[in-house]
Length: 460
Image (cartoon, rainbow, N blue to C red; front, side):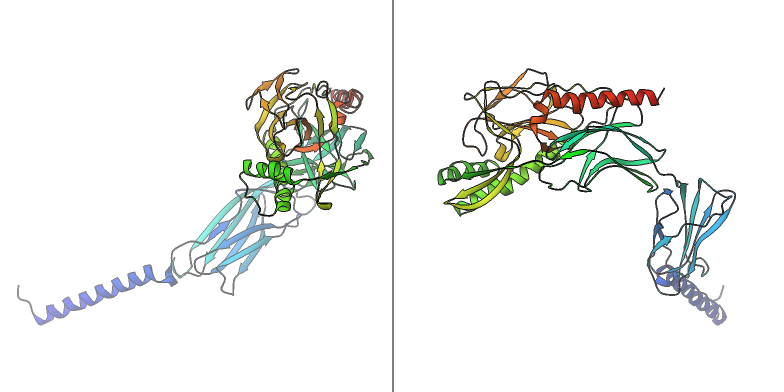
């Protein structure tokens, strides 16, 4: 076949058209105007809504958002919640979907929220990229039922108290005891379903008692607040002035910082302050974290805790709640609370525990020295500091009367003794209450027994 000029023209027309088509295809695929990435919608797959606060939805796109429609559908009715054609160039939008106005005869409990979004791309025959997201909606306007079943009559500043409560809600999310809206105390499952117990404290450092509340919040944000009635008594702190010598700072404070792998200041006074203040705060934080991370949510059907006993044949050399002022060369350089009992006996005196417990801490702890912490359940723990030897291992289950170590002079101390502390959810409380048989019988044992009677009566 001969190649004529006519055939040549057809060939070149074909090539030109092919190149043109390829250019158009390349333009469609590569041009931002025809981008094919669909908008993104950020919303939970399941939403609980009390029809009070708006639902927040985030919409984003590589280009800009052209329009969106938000609707509610429960199979019977479809209601538009929000519809908008976006005039401004926006690639990110934060929507607040307002609650629909249902009439009194229409009270849906569940439904579906549909979000339909288009972007400004010319793709999809100039309609733009589309994203449709569906989210299950549970409508819950009912607040949790939260009642105080029983509590200790008296709560002292620095002391402890028991609270037993009942909480019921199909969609419960969180529940706790709040002190002054400053401290939060966890509730533990107790005796039967929907009943809970907590040991709380009025921290001695908090001067003013305002309120103790039971708080219950469900998934939809409905909240119930119930007051816990307490008769209160303030704590009369005792001032204690302590002289600090160069020998103590260079021989004890410095060593404690080194053992805690902390930098040593150059100034003598700064060495003491760093150990007594900065390291103390760090140690107190560790104590709280250790106790709280060992909480158990296993149902507690009974709580058998006996009075603790002082170190055998010991003298009390310091008490709980002493407000210590430290003086160096007759100048006050620092102050701190003493939040335990210091008992001194013979050197390396045996330390025994008088309640069963689990070893949740066994290590060097800064100013506390070699320390043991035992968990006794319900967030209650006992602390044994400045030991010379430790006879237990982490996670050991110890029995009442068992020797767990010996007294010593480790940490920031002047001599051999035991620092004994009681901890409520990691906060040091007045040990004297937990040493007092009468207090424990009245405020712990009887409070729990009375609550159990009420629970049994209400669940028959």
